[in-house]
Length: 247
Image 1 (cartoon, helix red, strand yellow):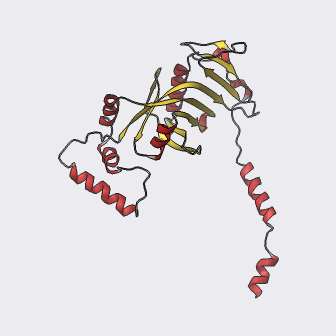
Image 2 (cartoon, helix red, strand yellow; image 1 turned 30 degrees about the vertical axis):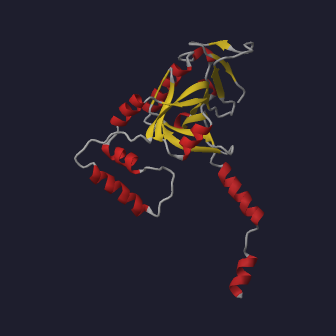
Image 3 (cartoon, helix red, strand yellow; image 1 turned 45 degrees about the vertical axis):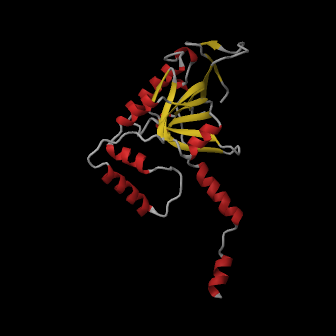
């Protein structure tokens, strides 16, 4: 009884606890760049967003950012529910941005149902991000084979063993057994790409470059193709138009 009275009399009201948590989270806010480092349209390294992306990615790599090619992939399922997860950018070029996954996975089912996707790469130490929106399509078998051949043997084993990615398993031991069985199966053989694993390419329709400013007057430069009303747009390269957006 004493313990109960003590807990009640010393309890922190729920509202106070929530307020304290909110204040604590708000204190996590960090400063971005100074205003003298703002992103100017005239100083862009390229007016082709693919080339500009390459420049930004190289800056991230040279800054020793861990996995600078990690990106969020957002999809929508058949019920209209959005889902986002991290994937690895495996390649990019004028044709688009490429990643690989299990064709039986939840994300693959989403992509089959709705090819409209969004990608986000965020380099927190640089106060920079790139948002990409476009349509996805499967890579050719040849290109998927070539990419799979470059993978370490250990990751090939996991790709083969995980026959139905996103499906439930009993426990971690079952997963380990699946990997061990696959490893023994291919002990003396090369591991070819299974037909349920391969690549996708996102053909970009919109690419936005963001650079944070401590004043929160952050820089946003967006590139779009097939612009109808060109009054507020500037001519880019390779068929792209660009403009600055409000933060």
